[in-house]
Length: 442
Image (tube, rainbow, N blue to C red; front, side, top):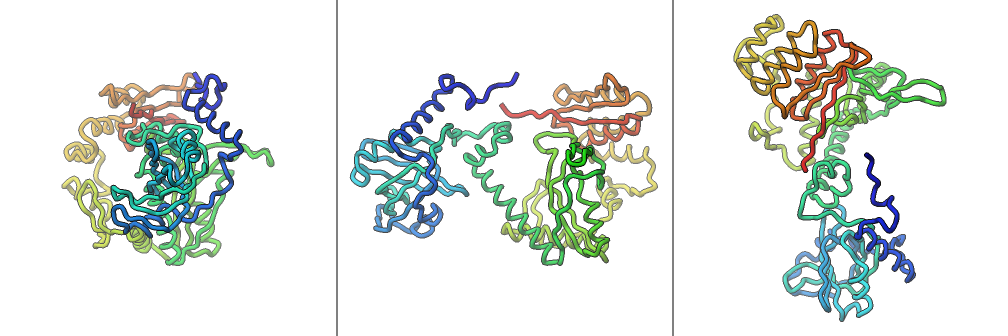
């Protein structure tokens, strides 16, 4: 059943908070006050005020007048004095104070009646340090910069995972980690581009809508181009067009672009994501390996440290990078020599003994999945459905016995379910779909 969004409800049916805020906006309009002015006379950001006057001692006052603006995230009104905390972009906060002696009775009363949490306000006044040592702006005048019609989320309580995914803007308002991640990602992307450009790579843009999808094994999103009356797909990889650019003479080329794969989705796997691919002429695995190392170091330097903490311990990215062949790595992990000629039966015994996957249940499930020859459904269900909390449902399509849908909770290891997909394809199922049910915290 589809729920009607609160904003789409008739005025009389709106939640009280929404009605009160709309009434305040209407009151401002009736008084000839713009609730959403085109601009305000802002002279300093909150960060600039903190940088320039952060040295003030407790109780110290200045005659320096600034104009600041920000979102109200805390408000406290008393008789002749009102306090508010403003917040801007990166999460910088600054206190503003309004006193009866400085702004007058009418302005102070308007503040108390019109301003709510979540509003953006403009405040002009002197920079001071309060009696408690809090850097503040003592207002001489104020104005509404943007009246919020919806209440601000509770700042001292984290949003649920579902709310964070569906309302990214709300997550950015209330959670510093979310605001930091936006800027951290931007810094990392700049560092990647800078490293590639320093090494002579040329960034290009290749078509997102294509006639034939290629460069990977994935199910595409399909669309229709009206101009040519032709079925098209969204790209599933960047590879092919970049290789064409190399063939055409662009010796070093890369693209950082969005990719679309119509497959599984959960809290950690999105149907659309950003992919980086780079190609070079006259290179080999060692030159590409060196590039990968330089990309990691470039990002680490941009973020301020080459030392990172991992579940396996502290890693110094600035140290020696070991060249490790795949079979040597597997042999080292299982404690036995593994080569391309090692029989499958020996590998299964080795994997089970070493538990290099996610425990006995997963090892057994993978082993049984590999061994399936005939009917796919029951053997796989028996292998996977061993815990009610980790149920995997395999259901044949009612109209096509060669199509199968695989569903599971998100704590099923992704690589296991991918293995099941490939096993299903080898067993003769021509169309295998995979979905993971998302489970959110209450």
